[in-house]
Image 1: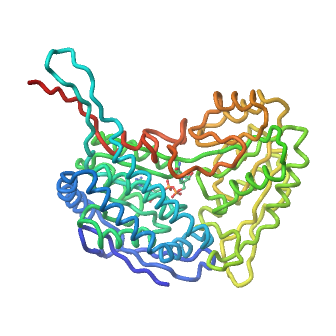
Image 2: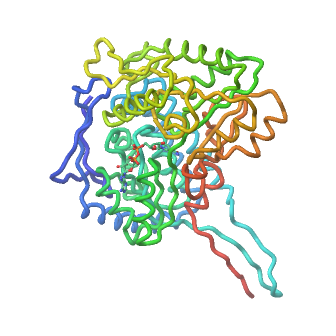
Image 3: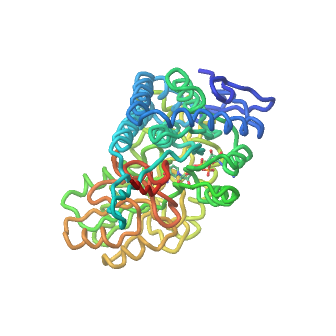
Amino acid sequence: MNYTYGNLIGGTWRDTSASFQTVNPARPSQFIGNYSVADSALAQEAVAVATRAQREWARLPAARRCEEVGRYIDAIESNAARLAEAITLEQGKTLAESRNEVAKACAESRFMMQHVMSGEGTRHVPSLRPGVRNMVVRRPRGVIVAITPWNFPVMTPMRKIAPALGFGNAVIVKASEFTPAAVCVLGELAMEILPAGLVQVLHGGAAVGSVLVGHAQVHGVTFTGSVATGRRIVEASSKNLAAVSLELGGKNAAVIHDTHDLEACLDQVAQAALMCTGQRCTAVSRVLVRRELHADVAQGLARRASALKLGDGSLPETQLGPITHQGQLEHIRASVRRARDDGAEVLAGGRDIEVPGCDGGLFFAPTILDRVRPDTAAACEEIFGPVISLIEYETLDQAIAILNDVDFGLTASLFSNDAGATARFVDECQTGMIHINHGTVPDSHMPFGGIKASGVGAYSVGPSAAAFYTTEHSVYLGV
Ligand code: NAD
């Protein structure tokens, strides 16, 4: 499959003189797509078009907007196979994972429409003056810029597009330069169903991204990606003081304290760590294990990691796809090398893998690093690959101290049947999302976000999204 796309401005695809190509990470000699890079002039035009489209859209009753977005979600569902293929060819994950991604994106988007219709955040408030009624209402924020990474090419953009539209905004998506095909398909479907200019798609990297973020007519910037880029976004958006929502990295831990069913627990942990080849912001990347369970956990995780079949995500027998791009593969290799230098033992993987029929494929074996010291990089820094760092502890106090002693605060799991341990974990674990007795995969309707270096601003998904996609107004209704 070859994709060729320009930038979606208003209702048309527009080319510039610069372009870039994408390849299949399972077979990097296979060319997948050719995309036109948006320049500053196109970015300015996109903002002007969005401004006009948003004015009309915001005038529609919320119920009508949600109905139209509902038809858009229906179209995405009808095109699930086409979207899944686009995801797998550029991102590398298995077709089954890609189909799940599209289904989850649709489920989340439908839940968001329910939140729009619930009118959350709007209320009557008693007045201090006789005969006056006070109200708090929320209105669309305006033009939203959505900047997205490469690991969830449909779900992350839709997590921004659906609430933006439902709450009455226009949205400009700056797709990741590694996985633009699926976002272009989302743009095509929007063109068929929604008024032109409400969903626009631009391609390119930091150059076009920073023009959009710093534009005076942009009212909100929602970004998902790395901490380093998040900091740049905050700097650029300070020019026009746009509202900012950042969803950043994680160093997510599963704490295995005591469990009646260790095999089921390890199935959950291995899945949460390794699905999408570990390239999920919510992937488990540290396993903190109580000393008495250490040997069994190490052995069980190594067995599960070694049993996985890596390959081309398009083939039905593949369980784990490649790393999405060369720079990420090099980062994973360097992280594992450094962990070894810091004294970690490699129980499984730790190296590239050659897959027959996938020449030059970017495959890294699922890796279990044992005896990782809590003060080393493998215990504290994001690897964003199929790598689990095992850290031993003796007491729950120690586990919670190690758990919280990192910059990140996205998600964590505790495996324990002890009510006291569970209560302490819920109270003291410094992450935005907390799971007890299962992995770190979130539900489609729960608030999604992190604290510390993992996120800034309102959580996406659920009622909190209104805080970013709308503005608040105090209204005094006199007689
Ligand atoms: P990245 O920060 O390199 O890039 C993300 C996006 O930002 C891309 O579209 C890129 O083109 C754009 N960009 C880069 N520089 C920019 C600039 N100066 N101005 C505007 N835009 C700019 O991240 P990535 O490598 O694509 O994704 C991996 C990271 O994303 C990991 O750290 C991962 O944890 C994080 N992530 C977080 C979540 C979450 O919900 N918390 C979800 C997925 C991924």
